[in-house]
Image: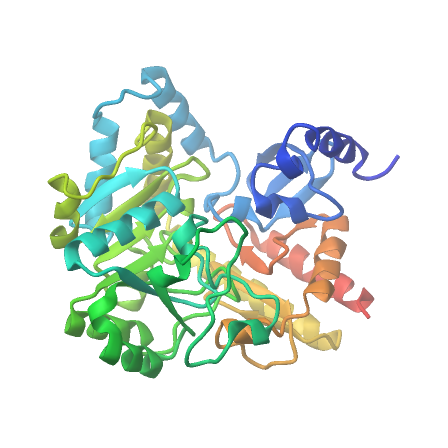
Length: 433
């Protein structure tokens, strides 16, 4: 019997009913094929073949408290007993909104949705309505959901496809995009404030918003260089442009106030999701009143039948309560940085060029000859086949990782878990040629 025989049988069956056998493109790429899971608790997840793995994927980031946190599950069960979806207002929704308004610096008003993609879409719509301008500026390698107008410059087959540094080519991420979708945005390399300012000096009358991940989590987990976010804030103020932070990953992971509190730069609009509700579908668009008033008065339409369902709101309430009362964030930074340092050390000992970058609660690992990765173009130096071998070797030894190199730490991880991951990585690194 093979280690993943039952998963393989189920995956073959799934391919007959689900397109590609999965319900999200990113689930296709786990080694040796997409695995089926049957239960998870804390820092561990068990597949249908009974293999238990120490999990650093955390379902692509949402599970900041770990799997199946008892307080979250209890609150969700209670809320479900009260009713699933009212198509109307309820006290849990109001209570959560009031809490988020206190926690998030830019949150003068809020609206709930189900996904980060939806909330990003709403943020750009609001920015266009307020400014009366048609376009937005975004950065290479940043991810703002999978909808059409943001499905550019997320990835590239090679550096040449990106065009010149000063005037990048907005590479299409997917087939099926409408003609002229590139006309809705401008694309620049990240972390270059001078280039942003040069572009805005001549084209600011076209630009409704600058949208950015405060940390470029989805490609390399790159932090902003000192002064970059503050420089964006100043430029937006100077030209009457909305500054949008996509905090779907950084939100509640770098702190209860998100990256905007962590770096001390307050955007006009911000989008939160993932860690907010421990795996239940919810997102929030939070912003300053001058922008959110356009939603409040109905000038900008924001809608959604499933928004603010009782179980999702309850999951967010419970998650935030644990984050507030149990001092989770110091542990995320301590354990994350311990793991980062351990991986650096064992990679040096194994003679492997494994570069580790990120703040700690989340970070990126990848094989590259570069000593530092500074922007998306640098991330194209990563040896993806070598990292795929590393991920497969870790999986075979009971450590589950995300194939693109992003690691997440949860409140459920322990010192023993971190030590296990470092020791296992040392073993796998020695096997790579």
